[in-house]
Length: 239
Ligand SMILES: C[S@@+](CC[C@H](N)C(=O)[O-])C[C@H]1O[C@@H](n2cnc3c(N)ncnc32)[C@H](O)[C@@H]1O
Image (cartoon, rainbow, N blue to C red; front, top):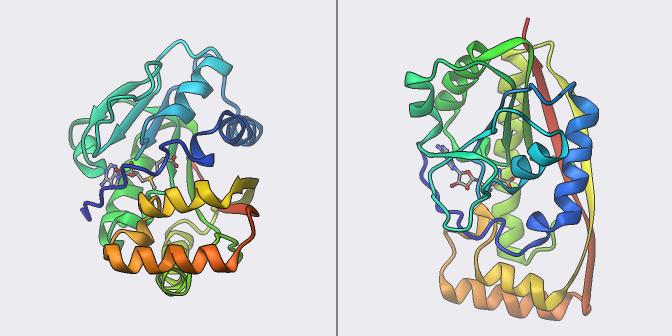
């Protein structure tokens, strides 16, 4: 596994705001036929706020399971959390799920690991169960950036296209949907996010490169940043 420490991903950013989580879960509920009896697994769940909130919304009887490499102190209490990597989880898992969610995490794995994971996830679905894989939309992306970040982002998006191609070749019946969230944040907040390397494309940058990037962002954008955070959702159904 590629072990990348994305500790600040959903730490006080738009990605952890009630409004984002509400909008994301509205999308999930619309696209799935979840009910209170549904069994849900979130791979790379971070703080687990999304499935925690989903659990309250649809009054899940079984706590959803969230797995992640990082065990955050402030994770959501409404989930059953396991600190384990995705492939190890499936080594001894006997549970079946109605929804397996893997949001903005698959790109952190190698292609051969993704193949194995897809097989394991498919085998762990209930009849009519679905896998929902969310990635940044590789063809349409508005994430505010600086030059070096853009360069890294483009490399990463190219790889995302490869992942999408791989999944499509293995599951030709997969369907694609778009999820988009309108973000409005202050430049100050966004700069704080950049400092904390909120996105994986920033992880390999030195402090100096981050500082230069922040200066660039400061120069390039006005006080408020407005853009759409666009994801594609790959849906794989149990056959
Ligand atoms: C970009 S964050 C996304 C978090 C959450 N899914 C969301 O969208 O808000 C990626 C998460 O995947 C976790 N992760 C990375 N590799 C993993 C692996 N092999 N197994 C489980 N979790 C992993 C990271 O620790 C991180 O919390």
